[in-house]
Image (cartoon, rainbow, N blue to C red; front, side):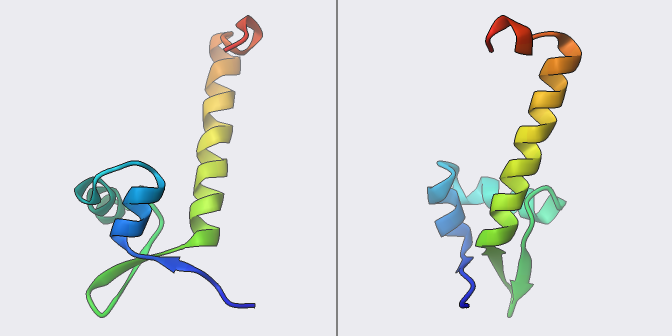
Length: 72
């Protein structure tokens, strides 16, 4: 099975962000990525896991704050 890897520009387009935002998030370790030859690359699988984790955190925050029961 072939894995898919994205450039900063491709991740930016996919998430409707600027390339500089993706770069900054990757540099800070917020967005999972790695460098090859000085260029950032992002695994599709790692990005999907990251999004799922972020969604879980948001749901837990909503439950803790009681907003989930209000239909948000």
